[in-house]
Amino acid sequence: MSWPIILRNVTKRFGERTILDGVSLTIRPGETVALIGPSGGGKSTLLRCLNGLNTFDAGDIQIGPHRFVPGSRNQRSEVQQVRRSFGMIFQDFQLFGHLSVLDNVTEAPIRVLGLPARKARKWAENLLERVGMAAHARAFPQQLSGGQKQRVAIARALAMEPRGLLCDEITSALDPELKNEVLNVLEDLKRDGLTLILVTHEIGFARRAADRVVMLCDGRILEEGPPAEVLDRPRTERVAIFLKRVLG
Image: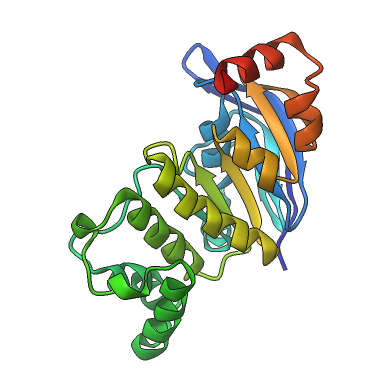
């Protein structure tokens, strides 16, 4: 069972610049949420605040039983628990180049969860089969295409049996065919009820797979709602202009 995620008036600043400006958002367990908007609008920063890669300056974040607030002494232990429950997948894959595909997927279950090597290996093989990478288990990252690397990164995140995934522009560096490989895997995970929070410029995927689209601009949520509502009938001129530019 996944956890609800609640942000209340979250503010993040880098020097004089405000990246998140009082963001409040609730994400239901099992929901797929697409975060869209112009570059620099705060989308990636929001994800990084959720798993503790970035601190924030005001407000609070509640993820299941865990609560983040600025300056909390218990923040580190809370962050570790959340990171085990919500895997993060990055645009640049961040695979271990010196490890095989199989070892990339077994590393965390063995070292963090204490899973016996044989059990971790079997679990990793099942996950690689699921994402269509079983035939490449003994390959190394440098031997893979971008789409293959990203599917391995998804398998690695799934190896921790997370309650959800935080996906930061994970298809932006891929060509159209490879993008579809990765997006198909995400749609499969959605059907399993995993919570997915996706920073994406793939408007077609957001329309097809997201339960809700959230538009972030200048650190604020301008619109949120079902894809057909936000993408087809935007209420604000700023959202309409953005969509026109993205969709051509």
